[in-house]
Length: 316
Image (tube, rainbow, N blue to C red; front, side, top):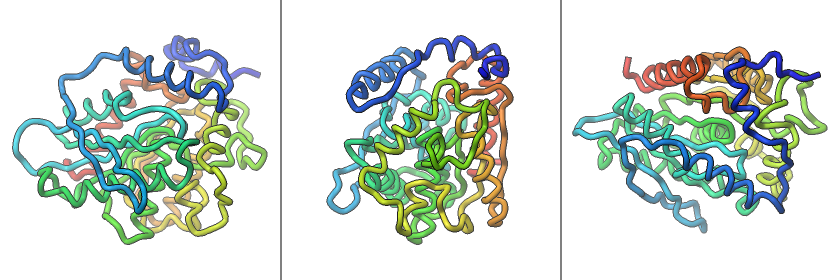
């Protein structure tokens, strides 16, 4: 059974543009180059970034950051943005268009994290890089002209999963307080697509990001971590014992995304833990659907994303 008839027809060019391929350690460098090349062909927006560095965790290198700062002197809210790529692909520069557009549309300072990738850097390296970026953003609030009480964290796919992990790390460590988390089809559960998968949804995950690719990404991130200690929620946010004490959450996903069921369950658990949650599912939307910028569903998502960021940052 194919789920193609359920896909929004405006997204057919997107799913048809992605060949059927298996991710392996041997072909990962070529896949990374291809992915980065596709992103580099997107038009830039009229907002240049400047580079910065956050001190890394103990023994780790400094974390490269891209800072998107609108013109003008005023005390702004801020967003820490974490790009996607299945834990194994992507760069902050390659994903520069999204945070630049957000900064311009909302007059908000946005910092994008160039975290280290798996398998070269397994857990907890990518998570620690993103947490270090959050600490830097908070510590530099006065110099950056931002309000430390209005910092939200956002990301899509692997970036959404890392954002959810950082929110848990900040809670567990008594770290920086977050105004909210804005998660786009976040990668939350390392079991999805594997033999221990909780979900058996026949229409989710056929296109763009498949079960096999998902398992490759999680296996690369896991390394030799046994997923058997108190950090398991930082590795795979769905495994957290409790979601109480996390910041208000907006979760946006597609009805045909591989992560659809784990996203619903995470939202349900957040609600049960007393966390304010807004959940939106886009009918006929596959993983990465917003890349079809001219489609109706991508336009709806863009409006919802910006509106959610405004609310979480206390701008309305």
